[in-house]
Amino acid sequence: MDNIAIVVDDLDAAIAFFTELGMELEGRSHVEGAFADRTVGIDGVRSEIAMMRIADGPGRLELTRNDFPEAIAATPQNPAPNTLGLHRVMFAVDDIDETVARLESHGAELLDEIARYEDQYRLCYLRGPAGIIVALAEQIGGPEG
Image 1: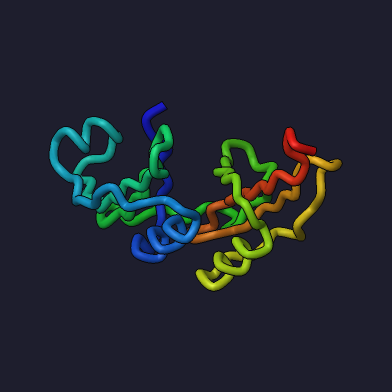
Image 2: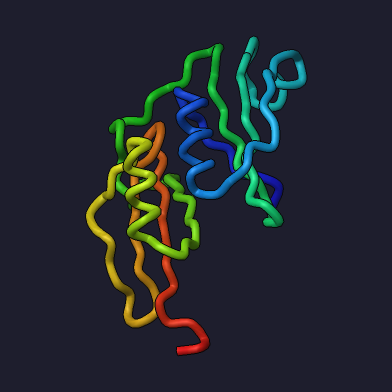
């Protein structure tokens, strides 16, 4: 896999949010022209994209803000996690409580609460910029016990 693309309305806020999760900005650019029109199937498309990556990790996250045409809001605005086609991005974290607090300072909201899965993980879903659902997982039972 090369990347996952997410359309956002505030590119700077999305970059700050994913930077808080440990991702790095790889690059930022404007995209338009015949190749873009043919690739996405929209005539006259103009977008600004930011490529985010995890240091030494595979794959990237492409954040896209559409200048033309305007992005279309999802209906309902904040769909439930079981909505068809809706995807979430999961991050492994060392301290889930501290990570949630940092992300809340960027406007993230817990969908419910931090839950425990057996003696293995503490997990939660948060809603971030543009309604993106981000999952966090803190391993609590490692191979050491």
